[in-house]
Image (tube, rainbow, N blue to C red; front, side, top):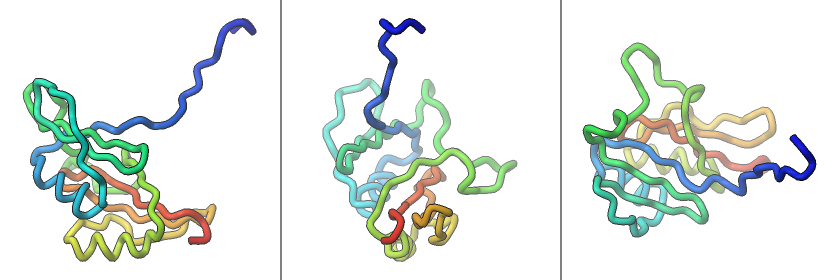
Length: 139
């Protein structure tokens, strides 16, 4: 690469898109449980919903003939935090786990410390997507 070539440098994660089977069940999870805001979505030719927390967006696509399948789990593989997942920062991972449990959300792993001191909890959304709720070290 020559010195005159500008290197690409991403700024931030803009959004994550996931395929779901039930938009209303997913809306309840992302809005009522996780506290995200539902935001306006462009008029695509397929159904979906968009949610936002600060600068982060989640885009849902309702499963259809041209989409991939909803969810990530398969009968051959056990559900694990060491697979595809996305993470949200929360103030207190322990409190987040308690709230999710009260909301009937499946907890994959109770709060546990990472080697750097952050605390992470892993939950499942209605379609089996693994969602990490992570609080910073010292919180």
